[in-house]
Length: 473
Image (cartoon, rainbow, N blue to C red; front, side):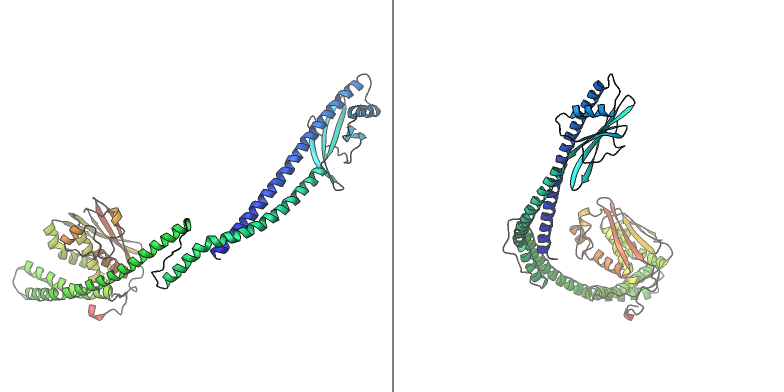
């Protein structure tokens, strides 16, 4: 349903509700007030008559017993010229009656006036009951009030309100129609501009702006359109920069990697007894081969947007030993204590890519000025959780939402000094997602950072693509 119809029908419904409610309560309140006034007056008349009857009866029976004829004379004396109908009963036997309503024994209460409504032949009465005892005799006194005129007056008032209600409703319907059309006009302008933007016309703007909330909404829309256009331009530029960076990254890693692999291979083939040299040569060779494969994989992930990787059963102990050797030189150079607490377990991973993630996270901790870093892991139900914790400078709270953005650096001067490019966490998150996992970051500025990698292992070993690229094996 369109806003125009919602607004129009809502106003009509509100008008109908308001008119019905007001007329109902006015008529109801008027009737209740009139009835209450009549009840109060009737009870006052009843009390005056029964008190007068009681007094007259006391004098009449002072020196003689109460008889029916005596009571009738006392009633006549009590009524005098009054035209109030009444019933008098002695021990529930009617002595006098001139009412339209019938006598109902048992309704009267001692020294308390009770009443009830009675309808006879289209007329409505209020009947009042009470009794008192004199000697051994119970005297019941009943009076009645005709309220038919009050009911008819209330019905007339209701009919008048119905006519007024219909006239006001008709006028209100016409006014609501014009008001709804005028009020929703800015919404139609906004809808037309939005439809143009959906079709790719980001230059669509609202020119006629009213001086109300819809005007503020129109101005907000124009500002949003400007922002979207700026963001689209910035996105196009960012995409170009990203493609240029990936191309440069792929090109620049080939030449040094070829040199490192060749030199490491010669050093590793040397049969000199120095174990440290041989071990260093092995690390260089191993890292060179890994980076050569890694360059192709990163190109597949970033430039070609491939969403499948080849995972195989990997020993976490072997991977930790490899990571420790890779980071040993830098850790000693920076005087960083790196502790490893990983169980002897197996997971289905792309070894090169996942090792890159861990090395990247620990390297980030070193760049953040940490001197104590812990790399741990454990199974929790169907998840395996890796954790990298440090006591570095931490990440400001306002920066946490952006640290995973490509090319974003929290401390730009520190990142440039450490030759950072701002791609670490962005690439790491993409690699972790390809491993059916996610990255959670918990950091306190000035105290340190804990980054968790949560891998869902429920579907292992069937969760990976067994037809992965042969060239990566």
